[in-house]
Image 1: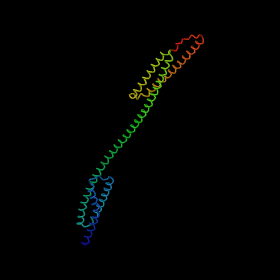
Image 2: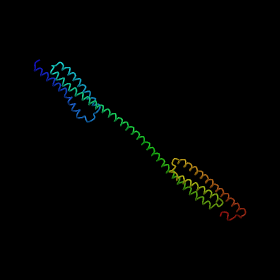
Image 3: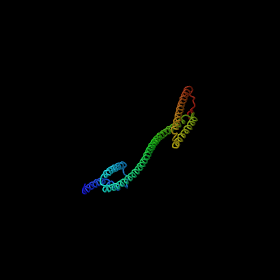
Image 4: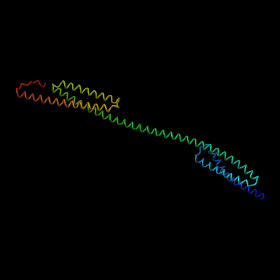
Length: 258
């Protein structure tokens, strides 16, 4: 091979080397341009694999260069050593960035787990708060219904008191019993007012208190029913006796019903 052939071979190898290192130089520029940011972990792995393949290609070129002439071989070896060192530096930086990305990814996953945990906890608290609100609404509705019932009961009690007062005027003999009944009704009315007053302070025992009030009212109604029936029976008996006295001797007392 003559000198021109040597120059031609050297030029071909040089062109091949330039073509081989051109994407690496572009990668180096790309790496320098993005060194300030965090790359995607998968992209880093792809680039690392590409660099490793380039190293394998370089090693093949080195083996091939051993068959060339010594001056050109030495020149190529030096260039390859320089490029190899540059690639090693790039690999080291890629690994550093890869480790940094893994640490940040692990930290982000940790924050994500904490966020999910807090989100689930807040969701549970919201559900509990909504249940409490629904319970308070039910209690409020029950309270309104109970207050309405108490007002109706007070109205009925007032009517009963008026009827009893009217009965006291008509039936003199039952005056003392009516007084006792009136006192009993007043006591029950005060008990109902006390229950209504302490309703907000003792909301947990509302159901029991209302049940007790219903029981008392039922007893009062039973007592009133019995008393009224008793009054009616007494009136019927008195009317029968008066009619008998008038019929028999016409000597009945004119002030009997006063």
